[in-house]
Length: 261
Length: 261
Image (cartoon, rainbow over all chains, first blue to last red; front, top):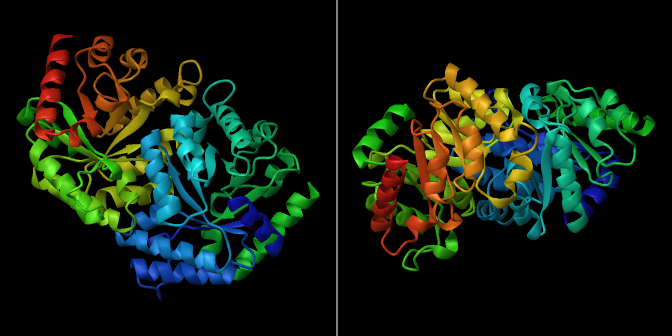
């Protein structure tokens, strides 16, 4: 189960850094061919170099799909490599469909690709999330995204939609303990503060550190210290001149900020 | 461009039937192997048998992904087969991410797989939809889904979120004419009625006919006759004993209902 693996790896690495594997084709070092095999080799090296500091890896399905059909082979192999390094994997795929299609997406993510968890967009509501957790997998529901224009939709209504989504997550978590988390962007500490009272035991996956410019300290001060908060960095780690150092530095910074808040 | 192809095919087939290609593994006729190649052969035959009645085909990415990495090869070949039958293709993938990832999904759908249009979930707002239309592709924004529990999220707020999404679609359509549509489920005529005044020239893709039990006449009477309404049927056509007859019957029924309302 994802939860147990994650707890072990947080203890092993001494932190809650998630390294996002987003292989933007224009930024992969030129010594790797721009093929599915080249991307796979690059990312397997990133996993080897950063696993001591990353409690979990998060490959982004979009960039593997953009490599064409053989990109999915590369994705499966990258996930196997993370498992060989004894790290769990969240497949960042943000799937969203009706229940019968969601069951097929769950099969793809968990059975075919071997991911431990997946990001899901709950626009279709509860019945479309159930197929993912009923198989024993873990979901992170997209709640408050990190991009600039998300507020117009995710913040719609009063209370904002993201609070409604967090309540859905809390409800699912009571029925599927350890199998439900939320995605809450680092870029909107006010949303994080509004979400904090909802489901304090549900872990958060937090994108927006690094390239997207989120402020760790502002975010940490907006929430209670009880929660497991996985801070994701993708481009700022994997394309750093020295990914191991970038990962260690960020892992240490996360530890300082969240220990002292 | 999708819009021109669609208009030609609506004229050729005399109707607005969209045939959804959702290869549920348990329901594919036993004479086809349960492999990516078997699914591909089955769906290519469905395309051949129903193209005279279907103005557009809509493969559902979930079921191809569930076949494992080689499933995406099958998907690419099924799309090529639809094009060989001179029909445009909406890839039903319901992608949703921040802009940099959305650009990768657009590359996957349009450049790698060759789809003409894609379904997108706009939970992340406008900046995450733009990469799809900026490449010249067409998007159908998931607005009012057809499944039972969608209303809790898609109907959140006042006005309901789906109205907010439709306004986003209308705004994008003024900047990218012919490249934006909405997904509005057949199962909720009240939502369709509320959405009808928004962006009357934006086409709708309407799932929920057939297996999901939507009522064509109730839906048609809730909306104005001006709009292009693509009625999708998947399981009820492709797993029918005679798919050609099922497609023709539904195409004729759609014509009657929408001509007389």
